Length: 304
Image 1 (tube, helix red, strand yellow):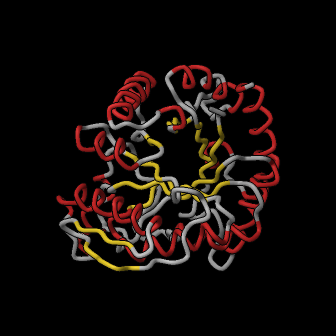
Image 2 (cartoon, rainbow, N blue to C red):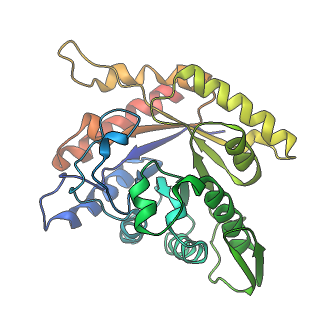
């Protein structure tokens, strides 16, 4: 399986001044031109005040920072790019109704000629669920039901589905995605029993939790391969994402060259996709084209 490169583009915060966020599309175009395989956007629908509840380090922005809806941003990016895949990593999927999400993502897949990867998870913030009248403690079950409904809506005409939170019969959701079998679903999270079952049943890829160790990625990848086989699925095409290990120079600044040296270890652990956050190495949009070109060159040298 070919190793792919993802770049996380920050669709939040202060990358651009107010009124200039249309320039975000230029970042995606530059990544496409440089040969980046996937661009990844992240999601929060609303923000509550308790960002200290974020478990994986310091939250990157205050609650009042702008956070642009990722599927909308990807829809703007689709017509100005040619080959780069358009991904979420992650979308807090249970906050969207199943039928509406199926239609939105299928439309994006058609507009991009089959370049969408939908990374989904349950999120960590109670306030988002409260704002939509949803049960935060039941978010795992909501995600299970949602993923099952997406598969059916993308496949069948008419479609029928019944679960505790999603039910429909004789339902047409058109257009269908361009990609055979529907849009690939990548699931984020810790691999407890329910998550393993969810991934083995419906997912095409796994996104480990932020800060997962190399050992944790290796153990998780092995566990999922076994679960896929037990479910009657071939694990050969299953994707495993790993974040690039960010190394620093003598002045404590992120060093891309040293960081790239972590790739062989990640591949040995079972990673098939390496994600690089743009802002770790490039904080100014003007420098993005040169950064992407350098990153792709270094990445290809490390993986061929």
